[in-house]
Image 1 (cartoon, rainbow, N blue to C red):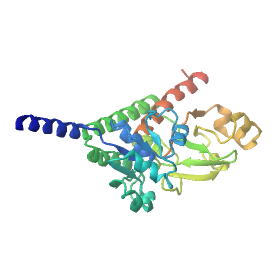
Image 2 (tube, rainbow, N blue to C red):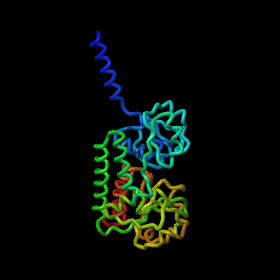
Image 3 (tube, rainbow, N blue to C red):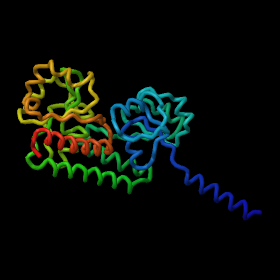
Image 4 (cartoon, helix red, strand yellow):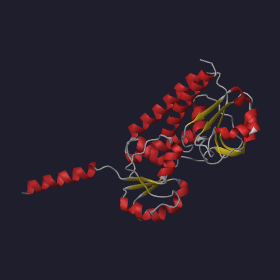
Length: 288
């Protein structure tokens, strides 16, 4: 009888140890990175918005939307019974309340102390992998992202024009990404030139008027959807836009939605999209 009870105890212990970690992420970069490392969150904040702004990034239907990133639904979080909650530094005001539900860890994917958000994302990925016991998966993700960027650099070649990389804020203003941004830092890491910006926010972009695109006549324009207006036909009434050298020469690339401040999975998607649409632009301009 004792041997049977001992065997049952060992089985129950083994089952408990094998149970997947119930992870909840209020930070998008943490959520998508954990998913890429093989740990699907049970819940994340503003899931509907994430799917809009991140485009085709995978996040299963099983993931529960727990409300706003800065004002999550604490009762819903408690019902999900997470083992670990991940937050960004800007969400630390929530930590005392969240700690009543489950252990909380702060993960920093964007930092003023880092040269750019791409290198910070690599460091954050490695830190998250330690907490999740997914170090091998993290190194594979870092290596795969680097290989995708290397392939993009080889495709564009050494004579690639400098890039204006941005998202439209409205028809007259932009979020202009510099070398300190996630995508700008990623491109710069393989020698693809991104036009430097004099100042930027934590995520490496600056809010500027459309006239900021007039500084480099030979630049390539790359903008990221979604648009804050119906479609690009609305820009045809904007004389400044029509007179930009890149617009007149057909050096404009529109990329499907991918969020500007996430982790390495977003970098990988961004680089793949840029590669595909750059090739399409060259074919349309008769350069293939």
